[in-house]
Length: 174
Image 1 (tube, rainbow, N blue to C red):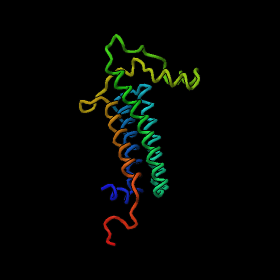
Image 2 (image 1 turned 90 degrees about the horizontal axis):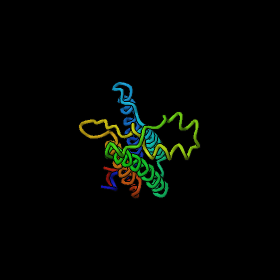
Image 3 (image 1 turned 180 degrees about the horizontal axis):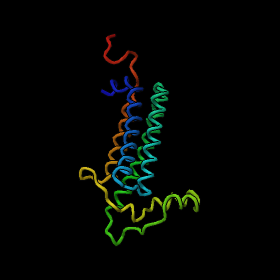
Image 4 (image 1 turned 90 degrees about the vertical axis):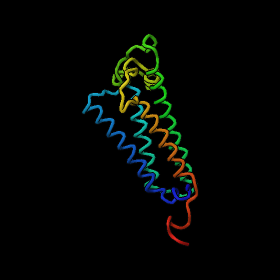
């Protein structure tokens, strides 16, 4: 089966990029059509999907052979792992009892305008009160959906890009 996926490496990487784009479009739809304002961790997860989508797009356009494809597999998996970590942190903050939820902090714009980048990122990762608000879709929190998306796309990136491509196209006879 893995050999069949590798034969479709270019289009499947482009499907990965399109999936990331669709997830971002849906996030903006929720924000603007349903007034679900993103917290700072949500914004970071969106950035994760943007970078992951860019990686899939690059892999799809470049369509490297075995060694280069494996580099893409590792890079895409690393990006998905960082995104998964952000989503898991968000889920953890949402699971805290109310008395342990971090206080609401300043907005992202203020943080990045007034603090050095490392300090601003550290504050976002610590979480804030708005990150503890739980918005659900089909009974599942949005960060849980995000975690599922990062895990699925990370696994897909390895399945598609790690194996060795066949010398003949899928479905053809030798």
